[in-house]
Image 1 (cartoon, rainbow, N blue to C red):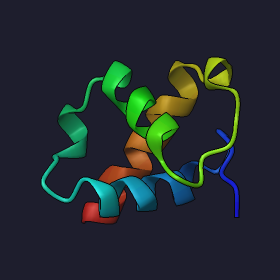
Image 2: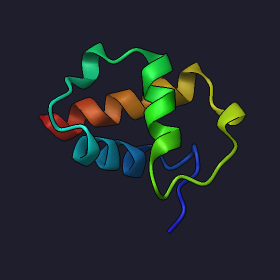
Image 3: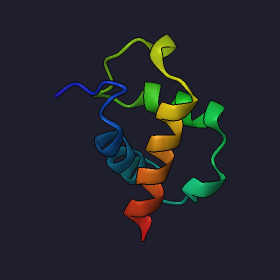
Length: 66
């Protein structure tokens, strides 16, 4: 399975597993971008993200923690 920027929910799930000690509501978008790009299954152009996508990932991640 390869992840693209549009797979915001799956990315959030994988970030939650990769960073269990991080509170997602306090993650800076620059760090979030780097962490997404570092996911093993991530296979998309790093330049194709934007604030809307990163915000969606962050919101899904916060919801995963609830």
